[in-house]
Length: 379
Image (cartoon, rainbow, N blue to C red):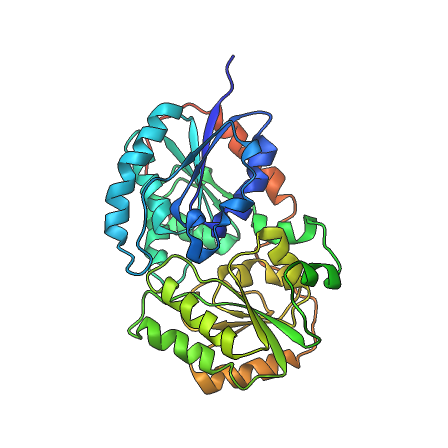
């Protein structure tokens, strides 16, 4: 009997570090393919394809559709990438496809899969991010998907309220939250030397993405954020790159200009999951509006200052403070939370054996006969 076939889709660094452990677990049982999305190849976003472990997969396909990051046209990307993804799916003929999150490039692959009657497993559904159009995209992916893996009970309830079958929703927690407990950590001197980080100051790990559901221009957003940091010379800011959203390339340019003028800062395009978590471990706080600060950092019990509305609506662990996009308020809040005593608090997205449970469930789903997707009136 031939092995079942699965396609994993990774659009960017944001999802790959969460998908790879699942792929490793399944690689001996399942014939795996990987489709690598566009942002992995973008020079302005760090060419994160270098962190992809291609040996796990029997076949690897690259997205051939290019994006003009100076002026991101999402409609154009979707209609140009669909035929490319359609051909890949026709070649592989997978039993399942695995996707994660809420990105527009993920939605494009989901559309191609759905209209070829391929069953879709979606991780990190049911979440909410009011300040980004990703919020709507995430819910759209949920409606196209057959199986749902949530990180906490509140998100499971939201998917139930959308009419999804209770039997197909699996609340197993976050791979990212579990990753923190499983990877091997270097000492501070070693991890800092790898990236030529030379400082005796408290480190603030910083990632700031555009608020795509906002009346504030992208230029104004990044200028407010960076102006709040100018006088904080007592800290050392390590910036990782913004994402491939509209405005992301502008954000990265402005951040690089800031770093060139401020010696207490460094810009690193991308680190890979293990290096990123290693640096997070030795940071005084995590700053910005990245989902990783919401999901992974609570497992370290590191204070987080979440800025603006991009992540508004998510469930927050108790180590996270929120702050509006206001120069003076950001400045004051950073000083305040760096003085807080760190207390160990639970990560609401962590569940024991997340990786094992998710992997085993996906394997069992490959054996399940395909059929029509039914919707329910859940009360």
